[in-house]
Amino acid sequence: MSATLAGEWGTPVNTSAHQKGGIHDDDTATDLGFRGGTVAGSIHMEQFLPLLLDAFSEAWWRNGVLSMYFRQATVDRQLVRCFLTPSDSGQAKVWMENEDQQIIMEGSANLSDCPKSSALRERLAAVRPADELRILKDMSLGHQASAKTRVERRFMDEQLRVITQSHEHFVSDEAYGERVLSNTQVVRIFDPAEQQIAESAIQPFVGLYGGIEIAFENGPVLEETDYESTCKVVGLSDSPQTEILWRENQLLKDGKPIASMLKMDRLMKNSSPLWS
Image 1 (spheres, rainbow, N blue to C red):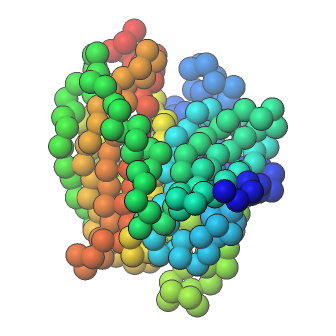
Image 2 (cartoon, helix red, strand yellow; image 1 turned 180 degrees about the vertical axis):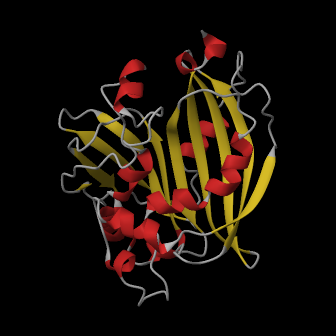
C-alpha cells in the first residue's frame, strides 16, 4: 500500500447562506442544533480533486468514482483538509478532517472498472426498513422520474468565484469543447428529476445531504450541454433524528450513460410539525 496523500488546508464557502429557512441559513441551522449554516457536502467533495488526479491521473475525468458519507457538518470557511490512501485493489480510502482531526466525511475513490463496491453503496446495501415515516410516508421504493437538464455557464462562473480547488478544465473549454462541471454543479444537473421525486415529501421540513457518490461512466459532464436525467427511489429508512431518502440518478446524452449519482438525504424530524 502506498503512503497517504494529504491535501492543502482549505476554507470552503457556504454558498447557500442566503437561502432562508434551510440548513445553510444560520438562524435555521442553529435552531436545529447546529453551530451555524452548514457548508454543502458537494462543495467539500470538490476539495479532493488534486489528490484524485494524483492517484488516478487523467482517467479520473472519464470514469472516476468518488463515494462519500458525511459524518459532521462544517460552517462557512471552517478549515478542513483532505486525505487519500491508495491501495493495491485500485480503490482508495478518502476522508476529510477539521483542525481538531475530527472526521467530516469519509468514503472511497476508484475508477469504474474497480471490482470493489463503493463506500456509499455498502451503506445502502445495509439499510434497514424504517420504523416509521411521516415526512416520507407517501414515498415508495421504485418511484421514478425523468427530466431534460443542463447547467448554464453562469452557474459554473459563480462556482469558480468561491471554489476551493479549481482546475484548468473548469476554466477552459479547450480539452472537451465545453468547460467541465465541478462536483457541486454535477449535483445541480440532477436537480430537475430529483425535484419531481421530492414533491412526494410532506412539507415543511429541513433536509441536508447524508452522502453523495458521483460516478463518471463516459465523462466528464459539461456545461451548456443538453442531457436527460433519471431518478429512482432506492432506499427509505430512518434514525432517531432523521428520515432518510436514497435516490439513484442517471445522466444520459443521446441515450449514452455519462454519469450517475447516488444520494442519501437526511430529513430532520424536529423541523417537521409531523414530529412535534
